[in-house]
Amino acid sequence: MQPQYYIGIMSGTSLDGVDLALMDFGQSPPKTVACDFVPMPEKIRQKITALVQSGKTSLQEFGELDHLLGKLYADSVNQFLLKVRLKPDEIIAIGCHGQTVWHSPNLAYPFTMQIGDMNLVATQTGITTVADFRRKDMAVGGQGAPLVPAFHQAMLSDPNTFRVILNIGGISNISVLNPSAETIGYDVGAGNTLLDCWIEKHLGKRYDKNGEWASSGEINQPLLADLLDEPFFQQAPPKSTGRELFNLAWLEKKLQKHTALLPQDVQRTLLEFTVQGVVNELLKLDLQGLPCELLVCGGGAKNPLIMQRLQASLPQWRVAKTNVVGFDVDYMEAAAFAWLAYQRIHNLPSNLPAVTGAKSAVSLGVIFPK
Image (cartoon, rainbow, N blue to C red; front, side):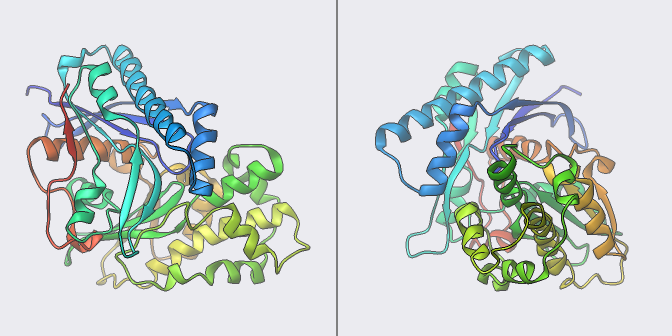
């Protein structure tokens, strides 16, 4: 069959870089053809971090950051095309999430903000680009997140298995694929964002490779209890969160009552906090007596201690990486945005009202012609 190529782009809350996935929707089922990663330039990472942590900037700085991100996405695609030996006119569309700098769905004037000038992406790649996926869902009453469960439902549903897809990026979120009920999905807590913030503060590293630093510490149960005593965890889904809640300032406020802890013990406790945020949600589910699988993707899937703790805490579940079903743990979300672009180009619904709380299913995204 004739290939139908789409490229998905994702840069998430971890700020480590840009993930790209080339999907072929001319095959049945659609396949991931190739993937790539471009590290986030330190200058851009620092600017985004400062903006997200403070919520403050100047219009000049904001506009420049929007431009820098747009150029980063465009350059990333152009490098990717050279690697996979494809020309721009062989790609039907790019689906680009943009960089979330603020997400506030629950106030009087709900909004979400992803930046990166998609006009630059479309013109500098010569490929039609689809972006701004979240705001249409919010316009019809939804949270604007999470969007990936619709992709999981389309690609990974199994009529004989109660399957949950867990993405542990900066924030952790789940998609619940219950064969006898509609799909639900929502954020369940801090993923890697606090782990990354803490190790960067103390060791100057971007992340705790293989959970090695956390493994050298011990869980502090009083601190863990305080971390879990956050109103977000009591909210019923649909719900979503981000670095505007789970950040270093939030952690340091919690630590004011726990002054004599070793930094590595805090790291180990933060890892357990990430795990228990997931486990507490899964224990609420009615599994219908079916075999149950937890398929993990995102950076957290590469942390052996997180995976060990998930399996130990969920003995009746089969815990595995999404690689076992054909989706690399690093590129699941990028593949999802290729699918979202495909849905928008064909004017097909791409949100799930049961997931986001939207009043209706709509086709998400704004098209930026090449």
